[in-house]
Image 1: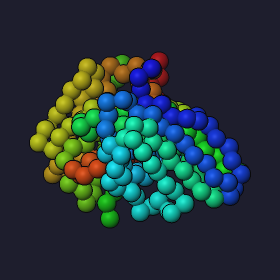
Image 2 (image 1 turned 90 degrees about the vertical axis):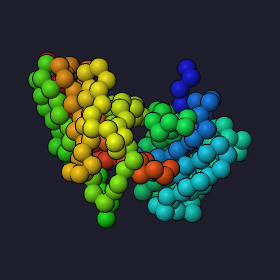
Image 3 (image 1 turned 135 degrees about the horizontal axis):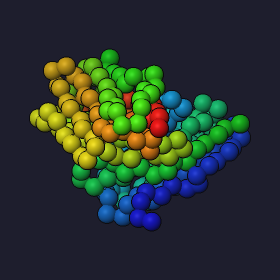
Image 4 (image 1 turned 60 degrees about the vertical axis):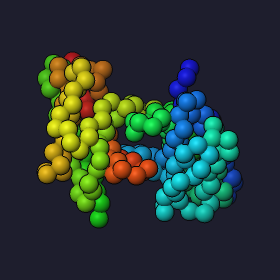
Length: 112
Length: 111
């Protein structure tokens, strides 16, 4: 499968714990995005990478959230000191120079 | 403030009919607009992109129109099938890196 891969698919964590999600984009895509989606809403932009450079970060992203793309390939999204409001689907997408984005299946986070 | 609005109510239509979904936006001047399909528990799938200088775009049974004066895009599915049942998301790019999505419209096609 040469699509965008996200792991894990599901994560249940206790409030206050740290979690890390991984995204493997399509190999020739140099653009990578993270989005968050809650029930009944569209994906909400979190951050954008072009190769290894993080070029934009949403103001909605608190300092508990950090994302990396160390070698311009896979990316990780870490949430520290999770809160119940962090429960959502976290989506990763990649694209070539075209604007259309290819999404992964997402990681569903539940904070209990 | 900037807003993208899609019908929050679900659209129910009979198989074989044309489904028309609406996307309205305010306070944006998008360079292009995209439509995605999303099935429950899965990531969105890209369908069509239309640029600001294009009035209409077609792909098989899909058609998108883009009226930058009305600030509106219409998404049509002709000869609809039950397999077309899904949530359809409108998304705007403003020439930068960020894509803003609407909340989506749920479509149900009855056999």
